[in-house]
Image (cartoon, rainbow, N blue to C red; front, side):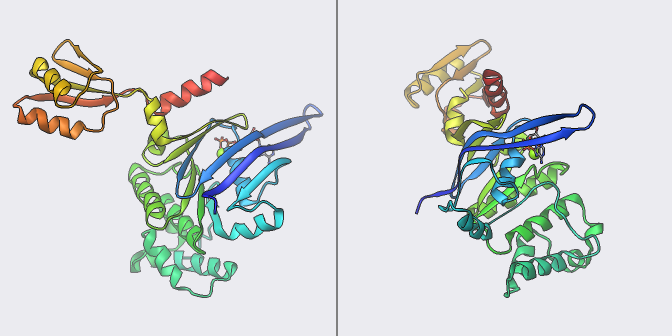
Length: 317
Ligand SMILES: Nc1ncnc2c1ncn2[C@@H]1O[C@H](COP(=O)(O)OP(=O)(O)OP(=O)(O)O)[C@@H](O)[C@H]1O
Ligand SMILES: [Mg+2]
């Protein structure tokens, strides 16, 4: 079986709206020949400016928008009947979740089980546990007394019922506090690593996405600009390691002889810049300390996701 969970080829979608003020029709093209591929087991970071077409694409995956042309493949299936059946294996949250203020989390999950025809209700306990909404006090609370983060966790619990293979989240970090964002990150990583769920997530908070995604899709004006794995992206970042010690001469010698690093430069104030791909920074630190060299500063710098995205957008606009 292919390891592709979702594939879109040359997707096009046009909306026409009649404007009473001008008596003219305005055309929007949220998808304009979009190609996209999400591999099984990945956390796919979907990035693009406002109006780029991210939500529309998620609506296509959810079956809420039918493209005008192009092909959609979901878990290896392409015909509309098969796609409809595959919907059982995907779930997600677009916009804010629709919840009933007067019901508890467990009551929401029970309704979901009924809607999805799930007879075994033990999945409710598991879902509540996964999203950390279990416990007597929390379970007694009605949704109207939930924080935004709790509502989001409940929506994730609802999406988890039926054991989806693909979960999609449209800007889930909006309005969530830093602690909630960290919890969300942990939860997504756990769902991905422990339960093998593939994740598609759109966000404008690139610093957060940077800590989550295993690959990225950069979209602009309904077209995919680039799809790239986070490893390949980091290679492109031109990162360098900067070390400031109390003995630059001795440090340089150790780096060249013991670590075989050639691409380095000694700057003023005992600072050395290493331009190679470095994955041994801990080792370097340990070795320098063993040689009695005092380390004043050690930091990795270079381009980051935000800079890369902005330069990609500027190049293509
Ligand atoms: N139902 C609709 N009717 C008319 N235009 C639409 C509709 N849905 C989307 N559009 C238009 O399509 C374009 C892309 O919208 P979409 O919501 O997919 O962008 P987005 O990337 O999610 O943006 P944002 O980051 O602001 O959420 C926008 O110009 C939007 O106005
Ligand atoms: Mg959107």
